[in-house]
Length: 100
Image (tube, rainbow, N blue to C red):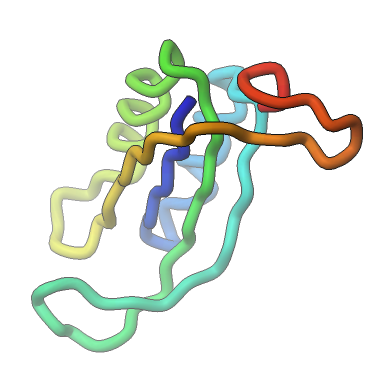
């Protein structure tokens, strides 16, 4: 299991969201964020997406985000893929991939 964290431009969020929704992912969490990269051009408004995924979904999700979030200009964002040892669904206590 993996957690995918993506920071994308606010103006590209709807396009990324629609593409992910159409791709059949199980779900995602979205947070408004502010930050800056190594160019230090002040705080920029961004959107942060958190997605829990099975190993077989990761490449498709990452490529979808890259395709729809990219403008080719500094500040397009970042994608982090993080290993997870477990996930638990609060409602019914299911664990692992079945809880995604």
